[in-house]
Amino acid sequence: MSHSLRAARTATFVYFVLCGTLMGAWVVHIPAIEERVGISHAALGGLLVLLGAGAFLGMQAAGHLTDRFGARVVTPVGAVLCGATLILPGLARDPWALGAALLVFGFCNGCLDVSMNAHAVHVEKAYGRPVMSAFHATFSVGGVLAALVAAAAASLALSPAAGLAAVGVLGIAVALVAARALLPATPAPTVEADADLKPGSEEILLREPGAGRRGTHRRIWALAALALMVMLCEGAANDWSALHLKDVLGASTTTAAFAYGTFAAAMTIGRLLADRLVTRFGSVAILRYGAVAAAVGITVVALGPWMWAAFAGWALFGLGLSGCVPQLFSAAGHADPAAAGANVSRVAGLGYVGMLAGPAVIGWLTRLTPLNHTFLLLSLLCAVTAAAAGILRTGSARTRERATSSP
Image (cartoon, rainbow, N blue to C red; front, side):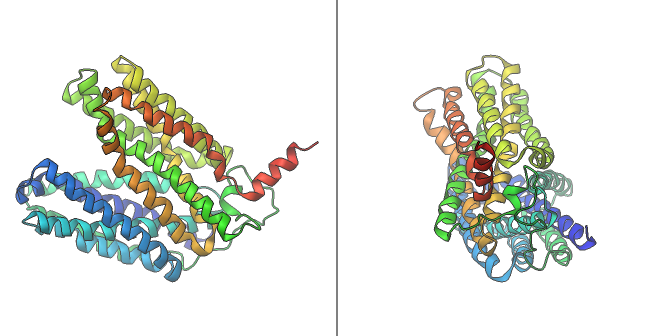
């Protein structure tokens, strides 16, 4: 393995951590910015829709730009713009300015998100084995770094604008340094089409032979629909896990906070292990049985009356979901190398819609049924995902399976 490929993988890790840090820096400054602007929680919730809308638009734009100019160009540009616009929410003094700032920052963050995932696909293809899940695991590391930076800024009595500016400038510097190690173009597959592939490799290295653009297009939107369902589940857990323990099981605020911590820790651990499991068992198995495990976990949460069962359920839910999204992103990026950026942007964009919609959908359902029973919808979505996991198989893999099963 060449030094340049190892350096490219390290640089990709850096961009994932950077993306998590920049977004996390905004998140940890939300209370201070809300107080400075003088808006209610409800008004803030409405403004956050603009952040999501900007991210979705940025993802779509970055997908086409990445296919035209390459991830090596778009990724550092997106990171620099994301770092430069991070200060904007901290400068806002009224709701209109804050809304505009979030729209712009969200757009730049969406550009970085898609382009770095497209580059991760290139790195994975060059490695010839699954590496996508580890990249997604390091995104959460950025959130931890953002929390540490926020604590340091608070100890120095820095304003939100100053704290965000410091993180943004540091992010720009890191982005420019890491840019030199990015891969110049999509590398050719390291395995021939008729090679004896490992279970986790055939979905990653091979494009469907003979599949027309129309078939690939339908497959991409099917992957995007699965991403929407999986990330809706993740978004629901982010916002409702702690409230479930507090409001349904009567836990204290301190104890309830550990529900999300349990879910997040399980997701991180799962993503650190997922690449090895994909190599051994294949991406279809990881998506299918991961979704089954998630369905079991969230059903335990929905129906279990005990605190220990809730923690175990949230942990299993996070562990099951952990490997699902990386497999969907990877499959989208490898479906058509000439349109990897656009395909990843479609899957990531619709998945992001699910992430934003999850909390709202659960909140709406609480008008009709108790909170814990609304989680049964997540069980259903996970079950559908498990049933549809075969979409990850390439045409060659399906043909090989039929040939093997024939007498």
